[in-house]
Length: 330
Image (cartoon, rainbow, N blue to C red):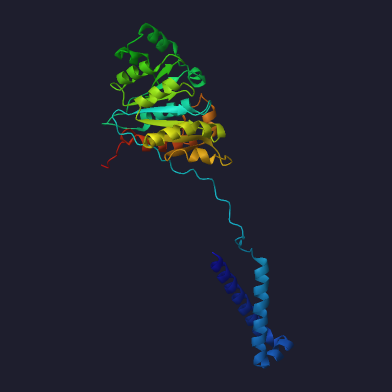
C-alpha cells in the first residue's frame, strides 16, 4: 500500500513537470526571457529538474500521508481460547454440573447445555431427548417451574423410584425436559435410583449440583461420566477448585473433569491457580443476554457470546449427540 502511494506521487510529479516544460516551450515565442533561456542547451534541463522537484515537494505536502506504524505494538483484541473438555462416549451420557461458589451460573449452564443438545443435535435421524435435573431457584421460579410435584413424589416413594417419575418432567419448547428439584429432596441413594431410571428414557442426563452439599455432590460425581465445575474468575472459585484438583490427580480422574470459568470479560483477571487446577477448561464470556432469565436460553440466541461458547463446548463433550444433520444436495 505504501509503495503504491509513492508510485502515484512520482507519476503525478513527472506528469505535471512535463506539462509545465511543454507549456514553457510553446510560449517561448511570446516570452522573450524564456526564449533566451531555451537557446542555451543546458538551461532547459535545469529548469525541468527544478520544476519537477518543486512539484514533487508540493504534492508530497498536499496529499494525505500514509499512517506509519508506531513503535508500540497495537493492543490485541481479547480472544477466548477454544475449550478443551472431556468427551462423553457412554450411551446415554450423564453429565454433572457443580458450582464452585454461589451465583456462579451453574444452573443456567446446566439448562443451556441440555437445550443445545435438544435444539441442535441429531441422533439416529431424530432430535435427541435430554433431561436436566434443575435445582429450584431464581431461574426455575422465573420461568414457572414448580418443585412441588417431585417433592411430593419423593415423600410418597421413600425407598424407590419408578418409571412414572418421568411424567413429572416439564417440556421446554426446545425439546429439552426439565425436572425441577427442591433443595433437600434428593439424597445420594435417591439420586442413583433416579439416574438409573432416566437413562432408560433419555439420550442425555444433566445434573445440576449445588455447592456445599457434599453428599449429593459425591453421588452425582459417581453417577456421571463427566463432571463440569463452574466457577468465576475469582479467588473464591480458585480456592474451591483446589480440593477437586487434588482428588482428580490423586486418583487419576483428571480426564473426567472440565473447568468452566463463567462470566469472563476483557478486564477479568483469572487467578493462575484456578487455570492450573485442571487440564480441561473453557472460558464462557460475559454478555448482556445472560442477565435476563426471561430471555431465550443463550444457545438459542445467535448474538450471545456465552451461547456460542457453550455450543462449542457441547459439540466437544457430547459429539454423538451434538452432530448436526447432514444435508445432501439433490
